[in-house]
Image (cartoon, rainbow, N blue to C red):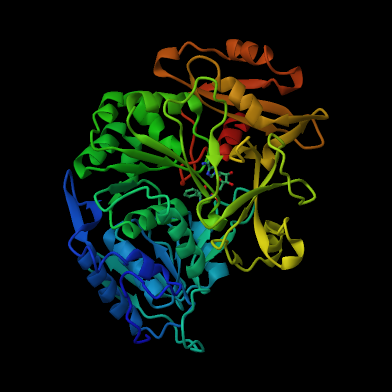
Length: 530
Ligand SMILES: Nc1ncnc2c1ncn2[C@@H]1O[C@H](COS(=O)(=O)NC(=O)C[C@H](N)c2ccccc2)[C@@H](O)[C@H]1O
């Protein structure tokens, strides 16, 4: 381990920093402030101060340092967002190790595939993790509260590196792999910390805030929340994942921890809006909500707004390949005629642009194109997948000969009169039905206009070259349980051409979600095919 001071506090050198330096930069100035607040048994919480977190990191580093690991070695982190788990990822960063967060109890095949491709040196498990077999050459350790115990040392390895650099991968995070093999998004220290600095410019939280994280470690939203809280000298509140299924418990955790900012995907609010409205309205310390990952259905957003009129709601847009890209405050009140939320402009230090199919710049407001992102926070590439990496990057449309590349988000958008961006769905959600181009989002938005419909999803089923049909799924408010498929279809027929009418319409109690909390389209397909 180099003898450089590990946590030089607030950097005045202007030199680029590593992930652990950014996340612990406030430890020197606010050592006794809470850094992590996590559940510790029923209705009790453990508080770890910044000084205690820093000591945890040093302890974990000592346990790892003697293993002869090489800079750039991968460490699988089957972990949660406890202080001990966060200290483990910080220790990896401080030793130049690349952590691969897989969340607790990952599906066996997915874990096996990730281990095959990343060839980890070490596997670290937090309490309550799974018990999948770890290949013998891979070291095994346990993150247990204040200590990190090594059960089995990793196999010996050659050591060729002398010095970690900010271009080294801080982590590799695997996408949900909706299209085929999961892709490992490689994020360098430079990419992550430059995003964090862009986020800090938004001044979303102060050291008096308590930022509740509701995303699992394998979803980079959790890493963004860790950066938002620790980078601001605030406290990170770890909401137990299981409480998200029980709205009363979820609201109680927010109340008892004094959460002032709650960050999560839109689906975390659905059960609370349905069953725990008063508890939500009583969260008098709550002052901010931030969501990302997918559109927040406007009827639900309006309902949330009505219950929390003074709370600032931030629509945070972006892809894991650039961490995130924009932070746009949702207008309060939200005008009745708003059909789409603006995602605004990219954060300080980045740009969002629009290109056509040929990769040429689109500048005219209202014209739909693909959103591309220029940012120092761009990923290094997909792990061991140069073809997918090439496909995701585009020569800078403004100056193609410069060698600079921009990220293709695969999202459609258009700009407004001020140049602000509007998200218009995924490029692959434009489908052909009997020779006609259908924007699934347009059908979904029409369904959301029906009184009582709170959320909706529309899928296309059938072979691209065969008979394709639309299937729609809606969630209605508790008061509108009598909404039927026939009236929903008639409602669509009043505004949409015949080929855009769903041939199947189901009213569900809830939309199924992926482990990251997004709408699980594969489960909906299985429901219909089942
Ligand atoms: N605010 C949105 N409205 C609407 N569609 C969206 C939105 N944020 C993403 N998305 C969608 O999700 C895609 C990215 O998916 S992802 O790579 O799994 N990453 C994420 O979902 C989380 C992302 N890293 C992130 C983390 C934390 C803050 C912001 C963004 C985007 O390309 C969009 O299609």
